[in-house]
View 1 (cartoon, helix red, strand yellow):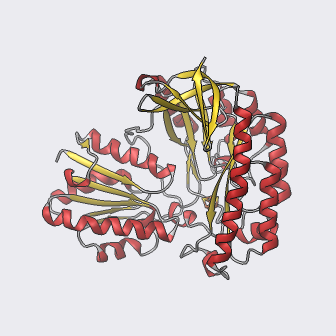
View 2 (cartoon, protein in one colour):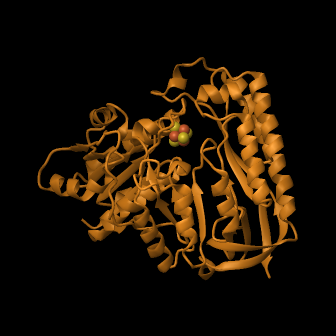
View 3 (cartoon, protein in one colour):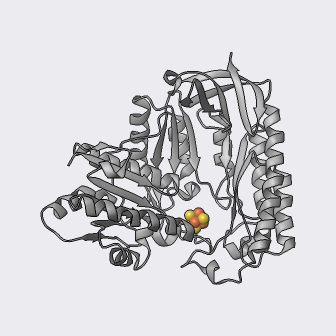
Amino acid sequence: MNYYYIETFGCQMNVHESEKIAGILEEKGLTRVSEASLSDVVVFNTCCIRDTAEKKIEGNIGELKALKRARPDMIIVISGCMTQQSGRAEALKKRFPFIDIILGTNNQYELWDKIERLISGKKKLISIDDAEKPPISEDVPICRTSFPNAWINIMYGCNNFCTYCIVPYVRGRERSRDPELILKEITAATDSGYKEITLLGQNVDSYGSDLASGMNFYKLLERIAGIEKKFRVRFMTSHPKDLSEDVIKLIAEHKNFCKNIHLPVQSGSDSVLRRMNRKYTKKRYLELIDCIRKYMPEAGITTDIMVGFPSESDEDFRETVDLVERVRFQNAFTFVYSPRKGTPAAAMEQLPPEVKKARITELVARQNAISDEISRDYLAREYEILVEDELDGVVAGRTDSGRLVRFPGEKSDIGKFINVLVTKNKASSLYGERV
Ligand code: SF4
């Protein structure tokens, strides 16, 4: 067994978990390849946030059948959120009998053990730990794939049960990692040259609430602020019900923390927010934005917005547009609500698709116009860019506030901080030159 292939679906959490799956396989001497047909182990790390995502993954799994027929010794592994839903692993096994191993979100660390058992003659293997608070697996090797950024989990799971979201059902309740292990991982990553750390959790602001030590997100950030090296810190995701003024102030005061806050609002209507079980109001959200701007006037504020939630009236939608105009987000990830089986909102009264379509079209147009106006503020100003990527002599990297800027450069610039003058704003991209 020499080669492995991983296909990752879904969010940054999954991207990072695939880095751990890769770490396990590389520790055993396997090499990554970019085509499933060339590999001995194929892993699909799956997502179930939307029905459409699951359908697409099922289609991709189906395509593996021909590969398995041609190479019966190929080991096919399906892991991640999709498998963790009640009864789903058994259903997958029945529909796709050629799958060899199915691992839940808390069982990925068992991968090599399961491969060995399979080779020693055990039948198809399924391992799903569906405890509410499964233990955190530490010391899993990581093969990082997003230099100069290192993803670092600070917590797992979610306690919030937003009515449209499947995550709490497939990721269990909140479990925070030991702060010393997080700090050790940050130190190791920055020692080996990583220049940006992104702290990951479904709701980072409630970090520590399950720890007996009194640790919380503010105290964790304070400890990270004490690391005397030049690197950037970002985090995702914050929840408006939990983000505190103390945390905002600390981010503002410390140069290593990026002045870029992603704060999902989802809707500007209090009645929709209530039905979503978001536990904040439009007023509270706007107060938070004022607080961020008080301490960080130049912060890049981004958000997630969902339109077409069940029973969203035209008036509710107007509240969302009003919020977008008042906040003036640097960027917004906009979605049309689609029912997710197994969540309370799927049983609520749904809106006709044409209403959703008209609303998303209006919202996207309004937000794009705002993003363009904000982009113009970047023109003729100098920014420190951390270079992330290179293509055909042009490098791309972000400002501290999270805006992507492109300028001439080479591969060896990746991971460097370079001062750039922004000279052009075209089709929502910024371009510049070194100073
Ligand atoms: S906070 Fe809400 S949207 Fe985010 S993962 Fe938890 S339940 Fe889902």
